[in-house]
Image (cartoon, rainbow, N blue to C red; front, side, top):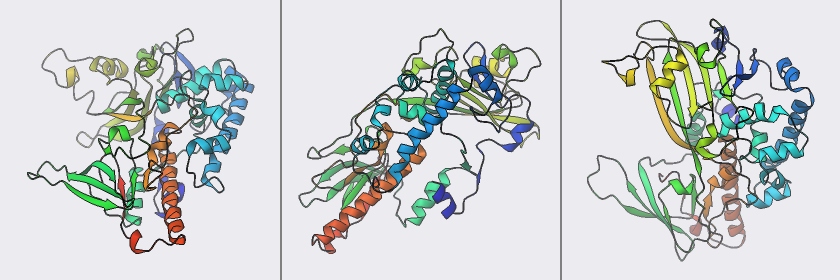
Length: 441
């Protein structure tokens, strides 16, 4: 991903606006639904560098966590290089890299087995797994728990990370067929693949279904969401697994977060980034119930902005939650009164929330402990049907899915080269590769 950013000349920056430093309130905090279990004033410190962290949890837990995280991510990093890259089997490669003991354990078990005891796991590591995967430490696997702690140096592309993938498509000289839905994939007797697809444009009044043939097909989306039917002769059909349905709410408001919402003294500014864990005596749950007492996974003040209509200063917020925040929650969070009559937006005045955008999506799987993973090559007989989302059940991130795509591309090329060495003619290799993503070509 970083190589692509550099190759395409894209500009990067911090995940947080530098102007946010001028807004009152601590930089980062962890809230358990009743009180703050951790508050970090500065933007420039990590969990293990913060004096507040060392005072609260001592030196050993942060130190052991950092050492364990580096050990685990160091083993994973070997997947980028020979002899492990390219990898035809995630299960086999995870075994070779001694990662199965990590993936087969819960995060809670794994850190305990490695001497990380006390509240650090509950307060810090769990806050990280909740904001990154909406899952508590008792149910997420150990690998993802460690990945969640490896966020130092995080960056973003100015004006959106989507530009990386847009540039990749351009650089590949690919022909995108947006608005074209793949409905089925069938293997032919010659080993190629026949795809049925149709235009899904609302303006189309005619049946535009058609079929095309390809040497290789890359299924680049979780199979269960694609609405694609696979031929019965195809050997491996990806299993359906539960995905997190995450509600993301973006909004702008002239109000800072209300200290009263967090039971803080009047006049004390609330932190700008609020992660969550559970109260000490609350039993962690899984699924949607896992959010527990806090009622949300995170709230972030992203940046100060200027309202283009009024010229007034406002703030841009992002909320992660298992359900869409209602007007009562938002009014309490920002400290304003709901309108009782003649109101819009469920009683919210446009003066209090000037813009709001709600999105719900299947963001990532519930990353439960497991020791086997989905097949990358779905059809070992024909050898040309590939699945990049096999990676999702192992690690689900933008970066690891990019690795999965690079891996499949290399496997496709290596297979074609081997066929040519075995005497396959160039004419037999003339058909293109098709990338099917989310049912769209």
